[in-house]
Length: 350
Image (tube, rainbow, N blue to C red; front, side, top):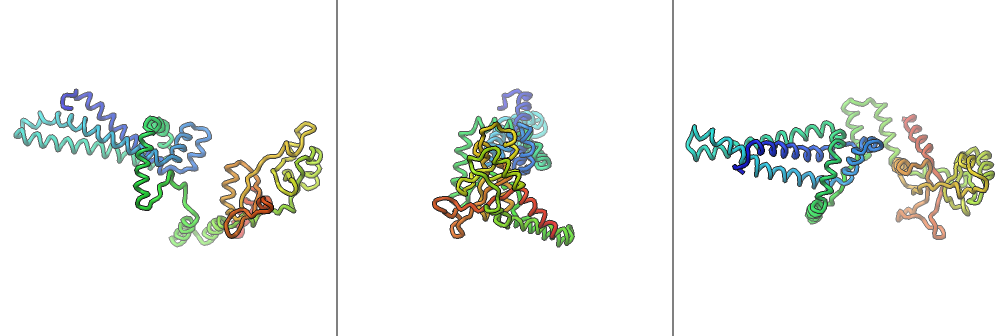
């Protein structure tokens, strides 16, 4: 590489260092980024959606960033170091023997290239990405997704080999970083903060009580089926309006031989044409186990954009749904309002 034009070598070197900085920054940005912030931004930003997809495919992204960093390092060694050495040798030849000048030029070129690569190509972008993880992840995600698309077959092979090596030593690989602390971690943080004086006793009790909801089962706030207002799937619009008026409920359970099929909102009955039945207006709702923790159920309902969920009884021994003539034993209905009332109740008693 000593015959390469020095100016061209410097331009290529700057590009390689910038490219290395790009791979380092996206790697640390997606590891440090808070998932909920990316999810919020993803509603209006294509770049944030790309960052969120990369965060869910983190093992391949890390393989891609490591591949990119390695290629940049090899290219710097092949192009930049010889170019710097070639520039230093004429200066040193006038001050010392040729053999010593050649050796010193080699050492100095190695130090200079390593310094630039380490500081500018790795440490600086790492610090920037950690300081602004969501911003850097959003900014860099789209070009990184393009690189991953181009090199995906190679990345899959490399990642598979790495996972195989981990499996040989009893380690299970994961594709994404946990998006937050688990309840035990949070309880420990609350206790530690209280002992350190960062939280007063009242606030500590409130936080501890709120965390306790995570271990409370959904059955504690479930409304039994016998207390629900319901209509049959063949119920007319007038039947839906009448049952809603008599019960005071805006949402009615659609029942087929006492088995809930879904939920109908009386608002739909007011705007639908004659001849429409409850089955036509019915909306499906998620079905959750009675032992599902309240926080977990709330998360599922938010993801499904449902304000209600059917609750089924589970077999205490196996965790499977208890059969009832081949059907799960549905025990009631829970609403998001029930969950919020429970959360507020616990906080008010803290």
